[in-house]
Length: 135
Image 1 (tube, rainbow, N blue to C red):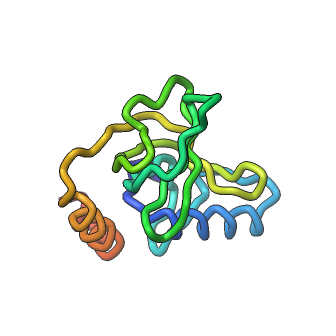
Image 2 (cartoon, one colour):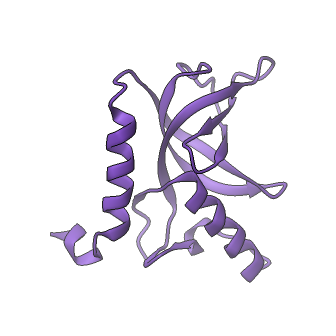
């Protein structure tokens, strides 16, 4: 089982978490499967911040066009302002049947061209064979 970082669209992550929850009463991120990939412990997503909680600066919501994801940090999510594009790495989980990402790292993205590149990166990662990744 590998626990490497997996690039995912929020919609794919949400479907994988819900499928995992319905298949097992004990949902475990390392049991997640998306396509041929399994053992997903941490994910990398990118999207636009659509909401920042005014009372809790460790909470924000991101939309990548495939879904909306709740971000929960252990410290303030600096650079997460409504309308900014962010890259986020973290551990996925379902909280009250909603997809949530426990943030390990996050970065504000300044280059507006990153959105188009991100879509290509996710597609490439989804279709790259495991043997190609190890080369």
